[in-house]
Image 1 (cartoon, rainbow, N blue to C red):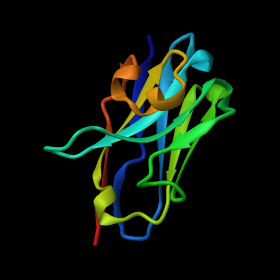
Image 2 (cartoon, rainbow, N blue to C red; image 1 turned 90 degrees about the vertical axis):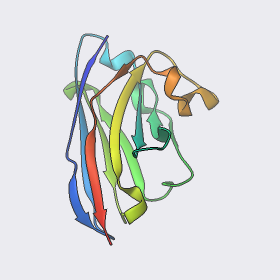
Image 3 (tube, helix red, strand yellow; image 1 turned 135 degrees about the horizontal axis):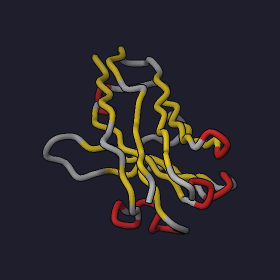
Length: 126
């Protein structure tokens, strides 16, 4: 299992940008599929983006396609989420997650992932 710690959240004006980081501690990061999700109170955890082992493939949720970018640096055991053109509806707690090989539609399902960080709050002011 991996220990995941998100950072980089904060308060930003609409239209602004943030870069979230997810630092992983463990010995198997490079073999993990990594994902980002977000959740607001009273709402389900929504899929944001995922990146496969080796970074060869990425997939994004419809709500953020073209605005957010996921990347990974296996040498640093870190996954990133670059958030651009932020909107008030992007306000949520953002979580990173790790799992073993995940493909296809399963990438967007929270229960496909084994390990989760505690989240970082992103607040976008209107």
